[in-house]
Length: 596
Ligand code: GDP
Ligand code: MG
Image (cartoon, rainbow, N blue to C red; front, side, top):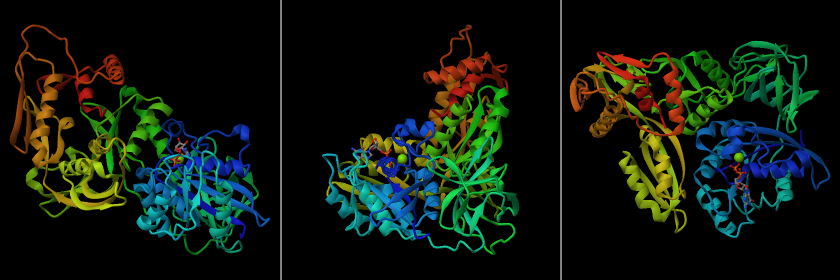
């Protein structure tokens, strides 16, 4: 075991993790040069297109060090975006060390700090790597100073690297061998393997990515999944070099995969411990804390016949993404669909895109919302994921909403604008400090609901893309929230109601009913569109009665995708919805509910 090193690469988005991984794979001849391509480990289409890593990726390399010995290096590449930090923390648990990559032109960013702290918490040996030193604007000395002052790591041993140009790569490999400790563990002890990821394969069933802590596992062995108490016979074990390649056995200290004909991920859960069914260990390894989705939206097939396919597709995605949750939902406007839970907006975005692309399903995603805690007058607390979950206002004692602690790194020139944005979004100021004379760290506590609307886009535009953010959930806080109902000709329409802060209720209500006024065609009688809180009407618009038959309607939004949806929907059977006496075209609902 002395010649094994397990490490991961962590960094802020775009600081060069995947490119550094490329160079390590190349230098160690893990990949033949003709098969090499940039960001080799980003294998998903979306990852390659967007240039981001979503899933952790393990790979095993062999390296002959300067001391003349051959080492096995297990590398795990990780995502940098805050939505996927769950992937990072799982990767860290399988390693003894981490390369902390910092872009020499950008310095320490929000996710550099967040990921470095995760690694420190896990007790990993951290090797700071200053990357992109080939760029003329590189300021390695300044970045070294930031690593010491902001993160509190010793930067005297930091490595200077250009992953792109291949500068400093041998030094990285030597540092891994010399500075990261070998794994501890006992090959002869009962098997303990931590499942740090799971992938579902149509042909082979569940493939569990494991880090062996003790013992060994080989084909034919009976293994026990400790959480579910299920026993399976091992069909294949192997390593990622870089693709799955079968091997005789995996031993304590190593990273590899186990296939045992397991048909659902629930039986081989991420975080569970695999042990030997005939010689079990008496205790499972510490797992991971279960992540809870925080952002929700409804997903509905445009073509109602696609509902079973959508279910199948979401189930499949969930197999590889245990953070994704779903439950059936029926909307009077959109029919049958699912209410899905995500770790954040990017997670939601990627999931919706994968459903469209990988499963070719046209779907409508409703605007995202958060989960509220509603304390009832009888003392019970319920969790509300959508406006219709809210009880009568008279039965509500208080409403609590999720808050995040938001850290923003940005140039000092933009501080005023950023603070204004946070304030406008009901943010509570926490702190402001200067990292350099030009760069500032700003911290606010912010309602998650305000963040998920379009906070990040707004921040990017007011800072011209020079801000980076990180956030952590800090729990629920009491808030003066109200449910605003929308009534059409006196009938409340669930699909249009929303939750918001009392101070913003009027403004939002007005914009909603104005939009609806555009969307609802004239009828033979005057139609009132009202917004109300409880029984109190706060805003009202009227749709004038029809004089002549002008059916030329115009729906908001002219995005081609939306139009395609609308056209497709037109072919559908149910074109009109009756809300009380009022006929509303399905398109109106779609145009209104679709999140753009
Ligand atoms: P990740 O998000 O941390 O995995 O970053 P990537 O490896 O995807 O790299 C982000 C971008 O930085 C890509 O366009 C790379 O080509 C570029 N890049 C990475 N390393 C270097 C480097 O050493 N020098 C320069 N000039 N560009 C680099
Ligand atoms: Mg990457």
